[in-house]
Image 1: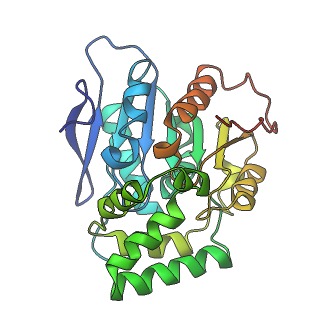
Image 2 (image 1 turned 180 degrees about the vertical axis):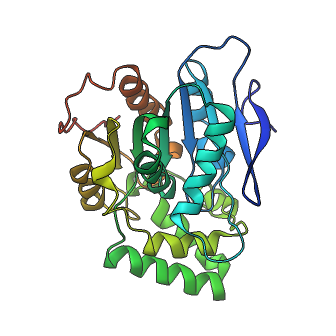
Amino acid sequence: MKIHPDANEGLAHVGALSVPFHDTLAPEDARDTIVLVHGTGGSAKTHFRTLFPMLAARYRVLAVDLQTPDGELTLGSLTEQVAGVIDQQAPVRPVHVVGYSLGALVAADLAASHPESVASLTLVAGWVRADTQQRLRNRIWKRLFDSDQDLLREFATWTAYGHPFLAGRTEADIQALVDARTFPEGIAEQMRLNAVADLSGRLAAITAPSLVIAGAHDQMVPARQTRLLFGGLPNARYAVIDSGHAIPYERPAQLFQLINEFVTDPAATPAGEVQEPIFV
């Protein structure tokens, strides 16, 4: 099933890779373009199934399905995939880039290395460099991935969603979330990259107006990490949503609201401002 009725599916050839994308571009569509970059183990369909159609009602939306090449995965290799899709599909004017989780690091690296391509940058549940808590979670994840993937599904569900979200679900709801969790090819290498990727030397080069969005109950990327990302960007604003790490799943409407308001007028909120948390 397509992510959206108006989305065309295609491939961009980036080096030896064929990178899938979903693009709502239609003839004479002059609307601004929003590029979506998913997170670890995800895809456009799994991470942006609800957000994509919301954005498509107002913008051209171009979503990338990141590929894990053979060999050691690097942040730069993911960045070049997104850059390649943009060069092929949206080369005329700068685009608004939205990155989620690992995709936030890719989006930030893109804005640093290809500033001419990025009109604005929205980083959802992103971080600068993994700290000891994050690396501990990654080590637990790896041991369970190698030994007990059924238990890993429960552990990953517990850490992905906010406590208020989980507390409001029935046992059957929780089990459905656990059962739906999959571990696609390349996820272990993406998890390794999560632990070693480092944006600390890249942030000062980012000139695009930026919005950093945090989940109030995020256990994977705690608020101290999103605040470090916010503080390291020269032209950034900060907002908090009442969610765990799975912001696009738990709170897609609030996420859309923040992205839409920011993309419509990035300068409307002054750089350095911390917005009030959105609780519904």
